[in-house]
Length: 276
Ligand SMILES: [Zn+2]
Image (tube, helix red, strand yellow):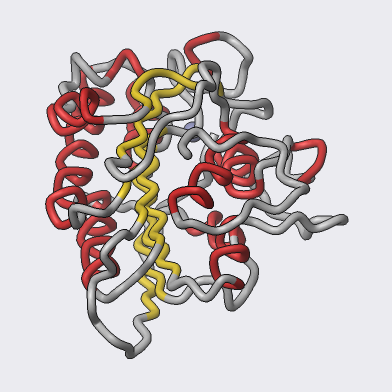
């Protein structure tokens, strides 16, 4: 369950800089709460047309606890919740900190962008690890997934090496109207349009991961049933080959991003790179 999102603050951090698009940027686009069986009926034409060009296009497993912040910490730090210690949607400092993908990229001199519409994610990276960021809270006035995508496009154009583009509307609508409801499928279709905006400007050498953190059923998630635990995963990486891993989960995403950005993965990470 997500928090109350009645307010709609916008925060942006745009440094100056060299405003030249990188030749091989990597974008992680996460559609919160997207179930793999929603992709076809939504429909999500951008994702469907991308699938045949991906080194991996299929499903992956979420992890318990099956809610947004713990899942994101597992995605970004490649360790299970017992290790990173984030068990609810309220952040607490890690007792034995594990470096996350934001820190690892930053320490390698990479330009990191983060565009999102759920403020609880702000602690995914240690202070100083994100070069450029944009936050808008979900509100009734506009399609904030589209706004998040537009800032992702700007960060690409401004020279980011890696951008996390978080699209939160689909989960929000799932809680309100139910997973797989017409309203939920409509939100997934709008997320697809947001994804299209980003992929349109991705240069030929760029790569993209499109995924969810968890699924959902009825008006909730958080259980270990397949509807909650199975997520879609698409890895578009024309310059990379696939590895033979056939049962990916959330822990494999940070090592995959490290491989796509040509940096080594910390030994403490538990996942496996899905590309070589
Ligand atoms: Zn949720």
